[in-house]
Length: 124
Image (cartoon, rainbow, N blue to C red):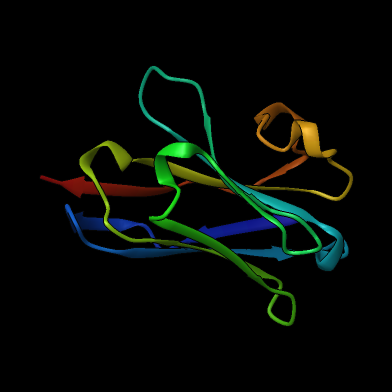
């Protein structure tokens, strides 16, 4: 399974970006896909995840601003980010796993497959 993340960039505070994560290999429709983010010197933290049944989960700090969705026909998961804040600046990673349990969905170490990161920079 390979993941390709894209869509990062530089945006002003209050602006929007949409990240994409294209998944190849495996059975995409059965994959739980998560987004995590990391800044220098910090651990990779959970942002959002979407299960095979399209149930979604978010960290509290992005609820109401970020929306995760999936298009099974395109083997792609999206993270639409609105009302961006400088504290959202990070490298964003997507991850996938076909058998992750619900209680582990926010735990980066439980995901088997990872894409490369895409940098999101929000200027104040």
